[in-house]
Length: 69
Image 1 (cartoon, helix red, strand yellow):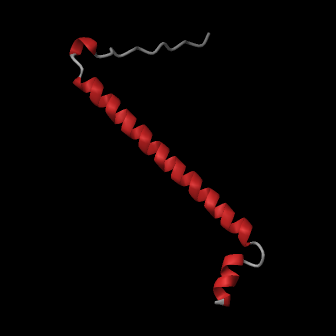
Image 2 (image 1 turned 30 degrees about the vertical axis):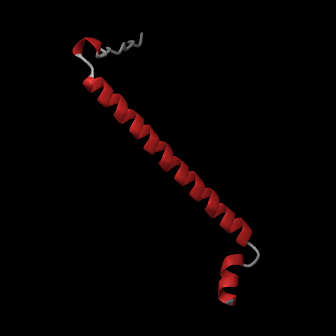
Image 3 (image 1 turned 60 degrees about the vertical axis):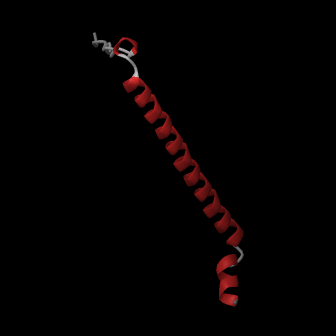
């Protein structure tokens, strides 16, 4: 039991260490969820554009590149 106690408290640094791990985990989970939501949104958008009739599809735009003087 004392080995678990020492592991959890890490010589009085446990609060800092475990809170750092928790914040890192929260950030990573947030990024994962955000990217999943963005991917689903993009898939819906692509499917909607693919299902639209030709007259309603957006036309490709040409990029204007300025030449250095």
